[in-house]
Amino acid sequence: MDAEPRTLLVKIFGKDHPGITSSLFETLAEDALDVVDIEQTVTRGRLTLCVLIPAPVREGDLRARLHRWAEAERLDMEIISGSGDNRPRGEGRSHVTVLGSPLKADAVAAIAGRIAATGANIDRIFRLAKYPVTAIELQVSGVETDKLRAELAPESAARQIDVAVQQAGLMRRAKRLVVMDVDSTLIQGEVIELLAEHAGCLDEVAAVTAAAMRGELDFAESLRARVALLEGLEASAIEAVRDQVRLTPGARTLVRTLKRIGYQVGIVSGGFTQVTDVLVERLGLDYAAANTLEVVDGRLTGRVVGDIVDRPGKALMLRRFAADAGVPLSSTVAIGDGANDLDMLNAAGLGIAFNAKPVVREAADTAVNFPFLDTVLFLLGLTREEVESADAADEA
Image (cartoon, rainbow, N blue to C red):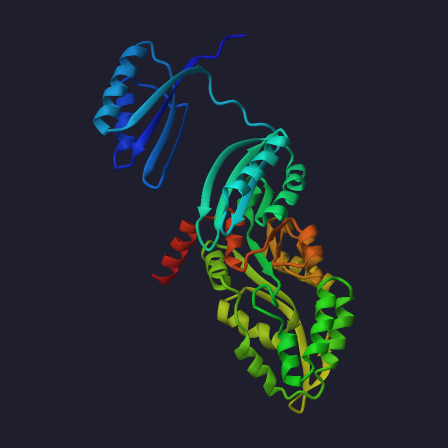
């Protein structure tokens, strides 16, 4: 077997300024060298540039010329001899996204330690965002995604950070439909509880809602029981509730960015069309499904019209939206917080538990426990700079 050819790793360090990369390669071009590999990063104005090249016949001349170049550019440089290219990445490749506010060094150490304990290797780390949370992404190889997710989950809980583990590959960027729950996901709070305040039965309704979200009650049964308590409420209360509804922080940014980069966005709710229709108009959503409160002679009857959008119904709507959009389920993302979202989260290509109940966090592909809905964008591999660029283009 032939020995691997000798290569040189040229590592450049120093204060970044325009023209470094072009002038370095002009220097290398004098030997008509191939480029085997290259990577460049800039952190707080400090450049790290690594170039892997074949060792030329007149290696001494190249080394001398590179050192003169580095001195002229006021940069530090190291040239390391070796053989061949980078080692092949191991089988089982994953994106590990870590969210913290703040993200502490001991948390990163703990996550890195757990990865090492599985026998995997961290091939690359870079920052996705510094606000509203610090988000970093680790590219990991050498262990299957499911095993890595199971290993990191307890450390995530112990360190009070969010860690999302997804299989690497083209499918991550192929996600093209996002479907969200509404109450306590897209918006803050529960619409039925806002209505119950107007009806004077908030405590009774809230108790049933909490039990249903924990998975202790059948959702359809619990919805009928809660809506029955609203019987006789004037329909004008619905308008008042619409005015009370507040979007979750980051919701508008999430939807606007997704739409800007070509996603379709839908909502599916165990709540009511009398509110979701307004959200569709405000946010320019593509799809929506929810229950409808029956109103007769200006008052709520205590019943809903038609089939109830419950736990199986949400998954059904996800499938319908995907079929209409021409998107395979593997290219969908579902976001929710309650037990009635579980079928939808499991059916989607990526299920995200957003500030969810424990039963939902344990069952979903990944979880976000910070109160900013736009952090979902980082799980899709977008950086804060890309989000801001989309916002700027949208405003222009």
